[in-house]
Image (cartoon, rainbow, N blue to C red; front, side, top):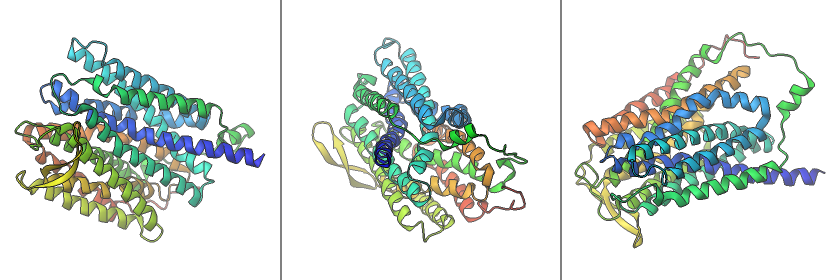
Length: 439
């Protein structure tokens, strides 16, 4: 019986790993696909980022309901619902390549609807995957190890997604449409269908559901997470962080793909090269997470967050001030020649290196913000999930600044955001409300 349960858990863990990868796959489709729409709307990067905006906007509406759904119907059913929603969202995005193609605006609206629905999917999956992996690992260090392993696959998927999108697009032309990236949408739907079938037959432990059936003493909440200053500042930090994490590579992708005078001046298959270079950012996030998991037992979270925020500020400022004429060779991709060495502004290197810094910020902010919350932790988690909407809002603002003042000028927004995260790591994370009972 124990062997059967263990085998079932292993299958569930592997499935959760794939879902972890799917979260970043769906999320990271939006920015590189946005270059298609930006080009179709005559280089309008703001409209190009609208798919990313819709994806993250869904978190604002689904963050708390997803948590409530988890409590009401459990991990397994919530995951199944999420995958069903994901299939619908990807299918609608695919339909944008075959319906309304005569009218770009109508075509675009269909795509945005699909991106918004996919946002509901990834929000629900994010709510499920972390606690489920922790539960399957038995909590504690083993649970954390599974989450870190899932996070590594998440980063790997995030690395490959812009690379594949760029390879399918090649160079942006008037003929470039969603049809060019349709194979990735079909792959995503296929993975969701397979995961749906597997999880349907796997027994997922639901201890909180069991406790509810048995009956337990009702927990009273005299206060709320909003009464804790470090939590409120952490909620703001999550909003800012996700905007930074998405904004740095997202705008870089637009910059490198843009072959007009305002772009980076990349020759050849600019979109493919941009996708490959941006993929390095996500690869470095994978490296950063592995390094962080190795040192987290010895180096306090506050110090990690403060150091990476300061280093990221330095890197972004260097990227802003180095002129476009200062170039270096970086590995890229060409549709006709495969892996190539591309000449790009040195600013691209500085921005890509920021992946090492942003890799540890989510875990650090979350860890510091829920410290000492006790029974209020679950409610705070719903707030954090809502604030992921920052990944849609800040990059959109950055694109507006890029349109008005230039791509590199838009990164001053990132500098200000990182300065806040530095403040949070140094001072804002301190719990000054320890007098509030949390048991």
